[in-house]
Length: 65
Image (cartoon, rainbow, N blue to C red; front, side, top):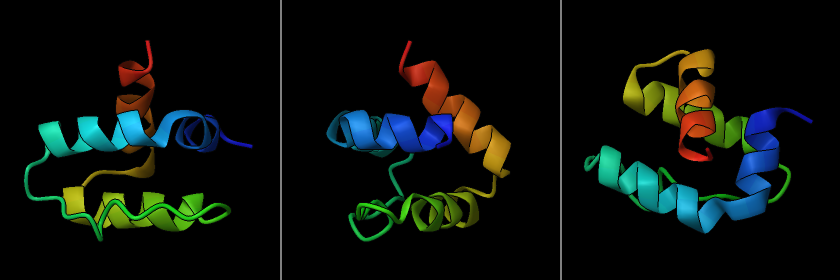
């Protein structure tokens, strides 16, 4: 299980709020999380933010510290 998956499962509500604060153009649909579909969520975020998987994962890791 990736670090991103663990963080999403552990506290998605908090992370969702941080994404909305950081990126105002993200919609609720962009941030829709379903158990077991973490890779799909990560792909949506990558596409919408124009970042690599590693960049998104690093950003999320930084928020959790």
